[in-house]
Length: 216
Image (cartoon, one colour):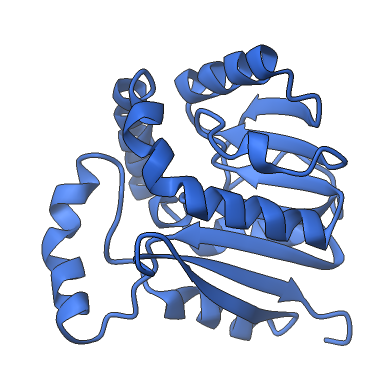
């Protein structure tokens, strides 16, 4: 638990510093990933939870007929997201909460889709967070993940490991493995990886659909 608290504190401090400039730095870089996540989420269901909503960069991309709830660990990020929702009149965004992904304060089976855009590599205990996502997901629903997901092989894997301490300073991780999510799904037995899609820039980021199996 100490490691989790320390890492969460690190993330809060990082995003307090980054909140004022986050949009300018990341809007273009993450746009394709955000659009892809929102499109897939809209196709998968109406009631959507976005974990790690940040400043709300992805919120405008969700279909208007959806009901979107967003959470983030950072009060500073949520404040920016609320400003954006009000300014752009994003009426499909129903609520934004400061909340820990390890302890989602929602009832079981509350959402059709849970999205984690560019946050899974930053969560101190990803498997615990994914278990929480699974708990609040309705039967047959999807968890949609976008991130820098590596495979740990060859030169790319070596580079990912080498730069990990550097990107940690800005709240990112370059060493998270796709296999870790696949292993989580396999251990549970009631989820399967339905798709891994490469997105801008040149497949550096990936979008992953993890679907609940009704017949598990």
